[in-house]
Length: 299
Image (cartoon, rainbow, N blue to C red; front, side, top):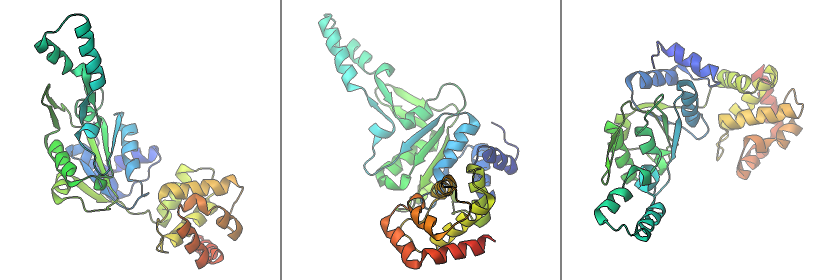
């Protein structure tokens, strides 16, 4: 896939309703051009995972997602053998009177009994555009898995001892995300292009709302973005992400609201804030004051 410029990346992402700033668009351009993995870090809800989804739509490559968690291992991430089918096959051979041990072993450890998990599926793609491999929340995995992941990303190959070594003819597009619940090791960062994804600024958030929720008026979109800007400065347990902001704007529009007011902001807090403690913090700070500040900021 040939891409001429960073501007082209921004245009193509915007066509798919993702507004990337210049820094993120540059990293994506370099990743596609140099065939390098990208590590996106940032708070939950800033749009890291959405990058992989949009890239899959743009490139036409299958989106393959590996959700990381504590204790994830090779069987969940790379491959495993379908032991149930192997056992049934072995019993069928015995029932048919075929007990050639060497032949049975060859048949049991063939590709027909191999269960491909996300990493192997991404490396062993055989037709069509390269897949987009999303390794989500890598910071939740153990150190041992992170080291194993680094080894795979070094040459895009996986060895199945009983079978063969699988190598990617063309590397997949790899997006790793981290919410920074712990630091990702420097070795993995060195292997990747890196970008910290910020919450969007006020004007860009307004543009995102208008792009993703066109039924929301310009005036309401500006007031919602301004209110969320205020909320993010309140040291909430979980500041609103972009998805929550869009949900809130859509909820207010569905209720027939053209502007923010104290009653409906209070009634719809569950669309934008997902923790009871955050609701209490906003209410104790004063919903009326939040609305007044948002209206003034929106202009």
